Amino acid sequence: MHVLTLTTHADAPFMTQQMAALEDRGVSFSTLSVAGEVDAETARSPADYLRTVPSVISEAGNGYDLIHAHYGLTAPMAVAQRQTPVVLSLWGSDVHGPVKPISTACAPLCDEVIVMSEGMRTELGQDCQVIPDGVDLERFQPKPQARAREAVGWDDVGDAFQVLFPYPPERTVKNHPRAERIVTVVDNLLERPVELRTVHGVDHDAVSDYMNAADALLLTSDSEGSPNSVKEALACNLPVVATDVGDVSERLAGVEPSRIATSDEELIDGLIDVLQREERSNGREAVREVSIERTTEQLLEVYERVADAGRPKRMTAAVDAVMQRHR
Image (cartoon, rainbow, N blue to C red; front, top):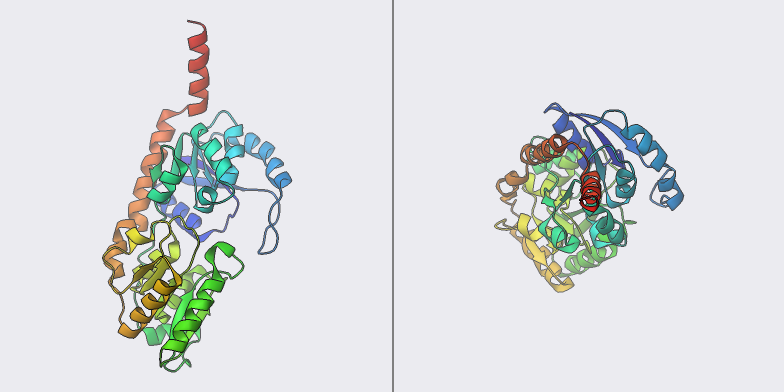
């Protein structure tokens, strides 16, 4: 099976990890990224998306079994071509944020739609498959904290608690100011120092070391789909304190010590409790149900179903409409 991947971020770790796992199952990929450069301070313009459409239409005619469009903003260009079936994966902010109208309009035109959580399915209000991004349990696994701290250069922190925030501060949806506020309060309330470690831009292979070096993961996001950092923390038995977003409450069900919070007060109380217990969690057992092996199997089933159907759903609907008019 040969798949054309459309994406706004060709180096997104969870997407490339997913593709590598599918390649091990016999799927081959070509990747087409949206035109234009993007960084923390520069976003793509509408013109960048428009000028990518001809490339998608041209490339789609090269014998692919399906197109897998990642993120709602790639959906219009995926459905603009007529010959190849489309699987659309929505990532979270394209359902909960300003991109939602585009995702909602394009989803019915795609042959299959994949979302990360039940909350996203409810918000989208359309038929879709819930398949969270899987976690690689070989890459993310527990290791001694002292060894991990040496690996990341935290071996001189003394007795200070280390709270991990694994996102760039400029990603406003992650709400870094709230994380700073929570840790500052907890630092003032506990006898031992508490430090917030904002880690981003490191190689994905190094993230496991940071998870094992920390004493807790703090997630203060305003919205999420299925945050990979939470699943990676669970795989390393790192306790998690998080806002009730996406599928976090489902992932943390039965995990101790970890806490779900809906207010600053609950985040503060939860972080104090988790740190004072000075224990690793039982998260690894809980996260096995979303291992990369299991989610790859689910995604492969979607691919096979769409490829076997052949003709794009929107073309089938158009043909049926013509047939009805001539009966």
